[in-house]
Amino acid sequence: MLKNILSITGKPGLYKLISQGNNMLIVESLLDGKRIPTYARDKIVSLGEISMYTMGEDIALSEVLTNLGKKEEFKAVSFDPKKADNNQLHAFFAEVLPEYDRDRVYPSDIRKLIQWYNILIGAGITDFTAEEEGETIVEEKKQEVKKPAPKQQVKTQKAAASSARTGVGSKKG
Image (tube, rainbow, N blue to C red; front, side, top):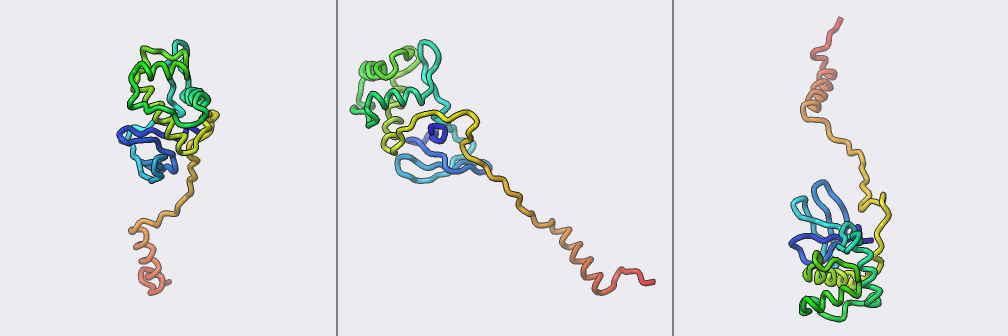
């Protein structure tokens, strides 16, 4: 589920991938439901590709969100992360992920994680499991579109048709 949820640098909130074009993606905001195009110049990250630093192996964001959901009973976090001080954020996150790396996970990361969690819960998304490898974000359907013949060929075909009717350029013998 998290592979289709995107974070876009410079745009608030999270977005759900709707469609994919040549040089753009169509995404829908989880906050207000508006659909917007995003282009190759935008920095877009799938939540399924994010992991958190721990003292051992990095842990996928899906596991962290699941732990946070279990702690909060899959309801929005009870405090405002913007108003919480750094010590409160670290103490809260230590309950969610006890083995996280306190040197590399900053309070701003914890605030963002809590904001994302609240947005996902507000949108009714409680399945934080990562998809199996091999699944695609958007299945592309490629259909062959018949292109019109170039103009020069069209003129040549018309000239040949008119000369056949009038007999011009044909050998009689």
